Image (cartoon, rainbow, N blue to C red; front, side):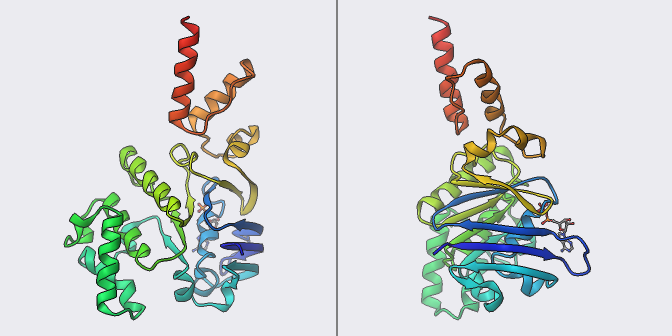
Length: 282
Ligand code: ADP
């Protein structure tokens, strides 16, 4: 059974005459690492809001087709039920913070689930350790850096033990180093068995971990496939997808040197270039 199955989904926000999503069909398997990309306004955030039922339960509007989360039709389950399977980390961590200590923040959702306090303490300890933020336990979330806040939100969602973790532009407010660290956290979570879905413009750090990329354009699923299949396509650049520079570079190089293979990561790219430099200096 797929983790998330979207079938012929069309969605209009209330009072809107233009659909934000048009006839989308896609499948996310357990263990996948998915990147959802595409130009601004193409429907990426709207799509992920359907994964935990925020659409249609909270946003309302016109909803056609269906979304199944581990086989359950999202129209027949509450957002609270679906959130136990699909945890979403939205763009601005500040807007998701509800309490005045990191420890309380992580415990909050678990208290709402009605877990006994010993179990809550256990889970809080577990996720603080997992995300290496034990030193933040007694801090005030509002006073933390955006990167730290992001980790606290991730911790509060991990504590609920969802199977799918969705991140909506997680690195948007991060400096390059924090974004790099964050990409490693995502990789590690995926390795531990979580299904990862990331809405992202910045692809250079994540592309090597992705099992599949979905490209949205004007509310439609414009393309889907393995990262190399998608990013090597000539049309992908021109619709406004940020194809990583190292991929564009190797694509051009390939026009001259047929045998060159387009690398999947910056590390792999620098390895290939090192060899080229070595050969040419022989
Ligand atoms: P993306 O995440 O790709 O930038 P969005 O999903 O945010 O795109 O937006 C897709 C379309 O839906 C846009 O035309 C946007 O204006 C519209 N939209 C997004 N959120 C709302 C909302 N809460 N109410 C009405 N329209 C919205």
